[in-house]
Length: 179
Image (cartoon, rainbow, N blue to C red; front, side, top):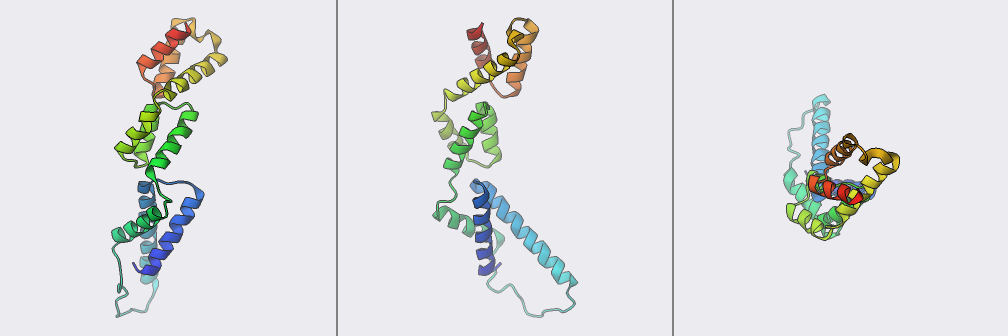
């Protein structure tokens, strides 16, 4: 890898960030994949070419890991990558979709967010999950008002909410408040 390739990867990462936000981990993986694709294309091209170069083209070459670290540091210096802001934004978006904190935490882990950042984000959002649960229950009751009248209906509602990642204790307390 040479400085020109680093510049191309910087442009590529800026292009990606122009489309949507990424966590640092996601961006590293995107850059790593781009490097693999470029190397694969070079290998295909060199296999097809009949001329052989006796000179080495690895002058000034950087390891892929060092190249990735340089590009990530460039983005961090420009404050274009910020895992804490990304986690807060994603958590708020998923809360607006009435997702449970368990589902949101798993999503953040999948995105490569550190455990400390996840805990920091959820230290502030304690009451929001209960309001999401209440909204979801009210939404279900709006469509099926007789859901809480039968034991089978209650079990169905509880199962639905458990599948969404809410805790049984919170579900039971919210249903009891409505009854």
